[in-house]
Length: 125
Image 1: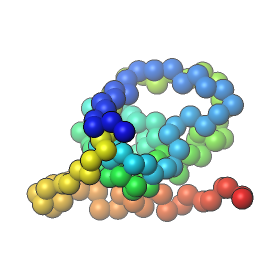
Image 2 (image 1 turned 60 degrees about the horizontal axis):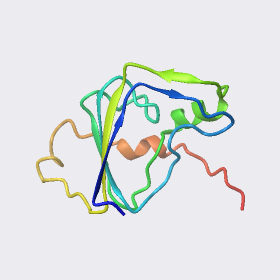
Image 3 (image 1 turned 135 degrees about the vertical axis):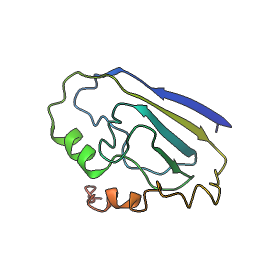
């Protein structure tokens, strides 16, 4: 486990064929703090606007919203270029604790978890 990782999601080609492209719905041991500077984030095209940030602490389930999942699983899997986008992510093995101020500002998206309510289980053991 890393103390901290830093990732930039900039213009890029999605070239995987016959596979699911966005990061799948998951939970992991790392805490992820993500932000978008401009453009669109492919795993959550609606509601994650430039200047927006999200925090998923360790073991908190997260991933693409239902619309991104539908697009990724029903569209033709051919090379696609994501342009004019810039997002970032800090990932750490430590929990990140928001301040009281961060939890009380009007810009807080209170319904954030609702983007996953329409996800259905597709695994048949």
